Length: 73
Image (tube, rainbow, N blue to C red):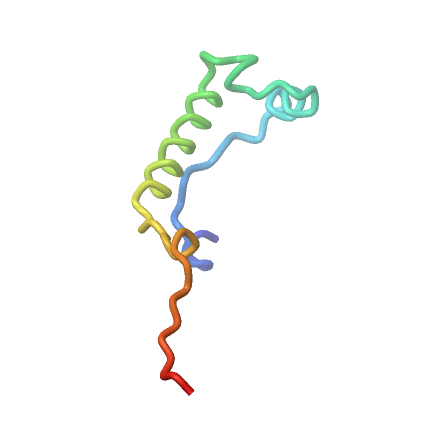
C-alpha cells in the first residue's frame, strides 16, 4: 500500500490483543511493556519517521514578511 500511494514504508506492527488492550486503556505499549518486541517495533518506526521529518527542507516562508515593490502612481 505504501508503494501504491508513493509514501515511505515505516514498518509494521503485529495485530495482538495486548496492543489493543493497552491502547484502549490509554497506556502505550512502549510504556506498559517496554521490553517487548512490539515496543521495539514502535521505536523503530518512530526513529524512521523522525529521520524522514529531519531530512525535509525547512520552510521559512511563514517567518518572513511579504515584500511588494511597486512603481509610484
